[in-house]
Amino acid sequence: MGPLQIILGGLVIIVSISSLFRFYSAGFFLHNEDICRHFYGFKEDYEGFDIKALSARVEEVLAQMESLQNKLESTVQQMEKNKESMTANISKTEYKKFLEEEVIQPLYSAHISLRQIRFPRAEGIGNATIKEEPLINSFVVEEIRKYITPKENRLGKINFYGTGKVYNTIGHACVLMKKELEEYMDYDIGSYCKDDWNQAQKLMINGCDPLPRRRCLTRASKLYLGPYPINESLWRIPDGRNVRWSNYQCRNFECLSSKNPKRGYSKCAGCFEMEKEKLKWVTNSSLPVDFLIRDVLGIKPGEIRIGLDFGVGTGTFAARMREQNVTIISTALNLGAPFSETIALRGLIPLYVTLNQRLPFFDNTMDLIHTSGFMDGWLDLQLMDFILFDWDRILRPGGLLWIDRFFCDRKALDDYMYMFLQFRYKKHKWSISPKSRDDVFLSALLEKPPRSL
Image 1 (cartoon, helix red, strand yellow):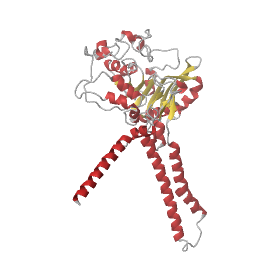
Image 2 (cartoon, one colour; image 1 turned 180 degrees about the vertical axis):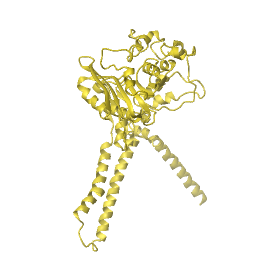
Image 3 (cartoon, one colour; image 1 turned 30 degrees about the vertical axis):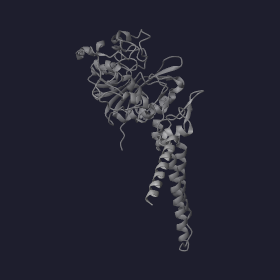
Image 4 (cartoon, helix red, strand yellow; image 1 turned 120 degrees about the horizontal axis):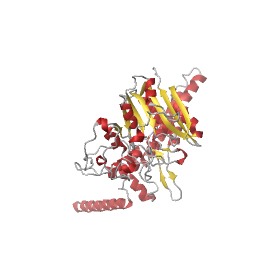
C-alpha cells in the first residue's frame, strides 16, 4: 500500500508541474494588461486604455440592475403574501410615487451610468492609436468627469504652452505619463537632481500635477552671486550668472531682446527690457483698454493690500504695485525663458503653477486678481468657466477682478463677455477696443458682490 501511495503522489506532482507550465506558457501569470495582449493580440492600439476602470463601471451598473430586480421581486412577493388582508386598492398617488422612487429613478441612474462609460476612441488620421481620457470611467459624478476631460483649444490653436489641449489636474493624468514620471523620479537619493526642471514642467502642463516630492538636491548656477539690493533689483535686469541657462535657446538676458526672433519665447515680447516695462500701467495710452494703477486703486482707497497677478511676464505689475505698498504674487512658468527666476531676482514672489491647477489660496482672501497676457480667445469656454469660478472663490467680497487686454475674435466676444458677467460683479470699468480687423481687446474692472447665506 505504501509504494502505491508514493507512486500516486509522484504522478500528482508531475501532473501539477505540467499544468503550471502550461498555464505559464499560456500567459495566465501575466499582469492584467499583459494577459489581454497575450490572448487578444493588441499592443500599441489599446495602450493607456483603463480596462480595470471600465470593468468597475460595468459591474456598478450590473449591481444597480440586480438591486432593482431584487427590490421589485421582494415587493411582488410581499403583495402576494398580503393580498387577502388588503381591503382597498392602492391609490394612484401612491402608485405613482412607488414607480418614480423605486423603479424609474434606479433605471435612470443605471442608464446614465451606461451612457457615461467611455470606450477608446481613435485619435489622428490613418494609422491611429486608440486612446482614452485617463481614468474617466472611474468617476460617476459628472462635474468630475467634465473637469478632468481635456479641454481642446478653440479653433484648433496651439496654446502658448505648446499643446492643443489643457489637462486639468487631480493627478489622474500621470497614468498616461507613466514613462515620463518614472524618468522624473529616477535619481540617486541624497545626490544632486538632474537638470530636468523642463521635464517636471512638461508633466505639470499635461495634467500630472502636483508632482511628487523628491529626495535629491536641487542644482543652482555654478556662478551664483547675491542678488542686487531691493531698491536696485526692482527695475534692473538680474545678473545672468544667477540663472541656469542649459534648457533655453538663449544663454543670457541680452539674447532675450524683443528684436531677436530666435529668443525662444513668444509671449510678452519686451518683458525683459526694463525701459519698456517701466511705462506699463503708469503712463497714459491711446487705447481706452489700458487702465492706470492709480485709477484702479482710487476706486478702493486703502483697501487693496494683497493680490494675484495671473499672467505671463517678469513681474512688472507686482513691482509697480509694490511701490503702492500692495503685495502681489505673480504666477509664472518658464515657457522658453527664465520667468520665475527673473521675478524672484527682482525681489518679487513667483508662484510656479499652471493654468490647469486649482489655486493654493483659501476662500475669500485676495483683494485683487489681475490677469494679462495669457487669457485670450484660444481658451475652451468650459475650461474658462472652471478658472473663473476658482478666481471667484479666492477673491474676497468687495475685491476687484482686473481683466487686462483680454483679446478674442469679434464673433466670439459675446460668449466671453457672458463668462465674465455671469457672476454679476459690479462694473467699475468696461472697455472694448479693436486689436485688428478680426480681433478685439476687452478690459474690465469688476467688483465681487457680498453673498450672504
